[in-house]
Length: 446
Image (cartoon, rainbow, N blue to C red; front, side, top):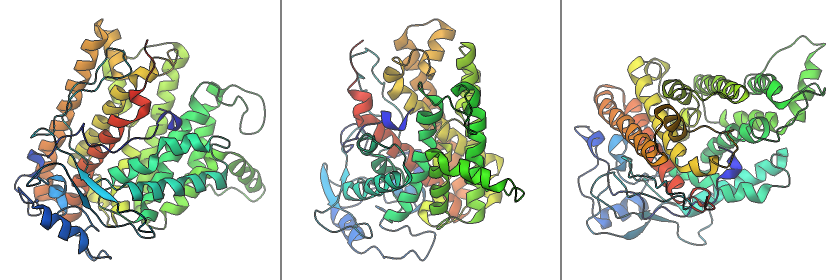
């Protein structure tokens, strides 16, 4: 979905559950079953300012590893201060609002825009922390960056209302370093703004060389130039200035170039290469979806899901360890068992987006695809049945992640254990952001 389609998400205090379950079993770094409010407050006040070990994320609420999201408070509905991000003036105490909810990660349903397509309860963790001041700081940085490079010129307030700073704050709870979070947020906005500039209705019909064309015909060439912005192309001297002129002329290309430059301050070359690889897979999936649109073809469910594995939040998740300040080695990240749980988490998170965005996508005149729509077409069922089936598929994936990640965490490195916990936290943070977004809850009635 378009980056500008996402409105400000209020604090998620009511639509998330209170705990994560099976993922926390039998691990050295599992959080205690119960943590007193006094202990939690102390942990936030005494957190060390510098990270000296991959096992000790800064100001994470509770121990690191897969137990990080498992806090059960001794009494309900409390606001507890967490550490202030570097550079944040203490004008108001940022609060970590720990939501009260059911005893497990299932959450109550949400109705979207009076369409009758209520979101069923989903098996998903709660967010680990909520720091509005940190989210605002990251969002302010995004707006300043977008203004500097000419991204969303004349539409910066819409970008601010999308509140990607809040999403990144919720999705990366093991860092309160605003600049690291801003690097991740820049990459995320660059990725999602591809839809606005290259894919959505009204995309520019001019080719990169300035000649007249069509947006559909130029999607591939434009994505190819994005790849050149991420991974510099070294042309013969005679042609290099022409490429540079094209890279500087397009705000999306400027966005990718500058976001990767920022990310390179924190990522190793291997981590940057990993991120480029995930984005390249996403580009292939974008081109496939454009083929469905051009032909007017509704894909079968299996083909849609195969597309949505790379066409998901996978590029965002790839940077979890970069933001956290550690590195999962390539041998572990590319292990088929690890790859299976990473892509499972990405696909499950994409289905959350499918559910929350379907009402908006109904207004796109057939330009957008989501799993309820594809399921209803293939199985010739009512929308409500397709929504329930989508929720069941999401839950199957979430349970698979939980089950298989637990085994990997018990046998893998400390860095892998922390990365798996980061994936689980990312799923919960993203769900919390979607659940309260005005974009998904304030739809006009059909």
